[in-house]
Image 1 (cartoon, helix red, strand yellow):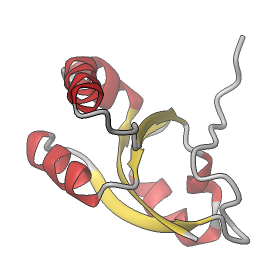
Image 2: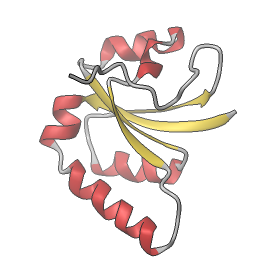
Image 3: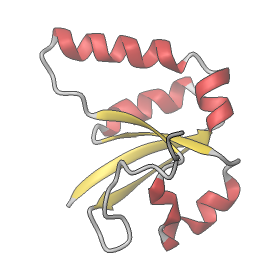
Length: 109
């Protein structure tokens, strides 16, 4: 199993109100320069919130939600320092309740 760390907030806040695109673009460029594999993902309506152990967190987060999920705890900690109104946490996957850590409930139209 792998430990995944996340920042969770409403999509409106995380994607529209924060300069997140710029932050992720800069981080991607930094990884490319260092020839480092990307270890973070932006997931709209993350499916891990449907796991029973996340019921309380899901209830507190305005929907639809979005998450930045990473295997790099330092990156998530750094993001938390930049963003104010977010929830941070971690989970292990794959598990019985979270089979795909990066799955989304968002349907493509």
